Length: 436
Ligand code: GLC
Image (cartoon, rainbow, N blue to C red):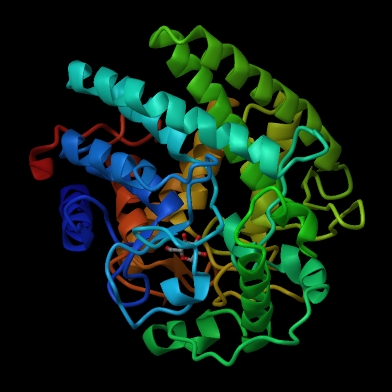
């Protein structure tokens, strides 16, 4: 069974491979997405290290001059996606969107580097990427933390990667819908509308895009101009983890300045993260930067904080919290608390389980010594695949596959769970004949 799953995962990656980048899935997402690519590279590395490095190189070839790495790169025209390059109008030679996504790339690069069989190639690629990764991290603290709080805000729900999370509901109501140009959604032609965000949410998403576009995508202005500014613990944990990983990598590659600066950013971020802790919920919460209040929404974003180094008692509390969620859900980890009124087991980030999130939380909890919970998360992840294939996401109640099928990062995470030397203490290692 394990070898068959590995073989299928490899096939999904190959099917979505466009040579120098990978699409998340045919139809629904026909371009390169930022954090999808970074996480998918981990999958490629199991059977083709060169291809894994190329995925990251392609992503960073489209970094903006100010340091931002965009959330979508529109390598080819495809009318089946909205909002396409004409809506974003970012005036790039190869068109891109104008916002970013969770900066998981430095974590990936470090992992690729640590595990590389071809050490010469890894050194060369990692060394070339180091300043680019660092520039992106610095951009975050400049453009998305202008008051120097130590934590960055997202200014559009799509930046979080958790597009329609309950976490954004109240802040999103502050975004108007007047002046939104008429549009036709394409996502609901590829996926069940009951699994996707609502029309009302889409109008607000597009209002933000139009507003940023009217400001010429000038990142020195966008943060303050946005009526949506949310500090997401999951997003910040990814940034903090990436800064810490970049620091270690920079030490190994003899770049002491990058190492020192990255370590400073990670330390400041970790200290500030503690302001997001909710004793009542036993997890971290989002902060609405516009109002200055924590958002009372116990979502998986606050659990994903475990991806960064957090105090041991916090990790234990997060582990207990996941255990509690498991009493109401058959499959870990629901993206929202199933006991709340907002929970919807099928609708995207309002309840479904996602393997990439499971992977990052498991990785963090493993480092924090929570190995029983890690075993459970991995076992549930593999059960979802066995029952429902390589879907975009799954009902945590019934395991129903949702969104797009043959999904790249889901397949990459399966390779990580089943073939990785650093996850799954209870999963025996594979010799890898299926990996060829
Ligand atoms: C959706 C997800 C986002 C992902 C993208 C491509 O927008 O919410 O996290 O990057 O699809 O898979």
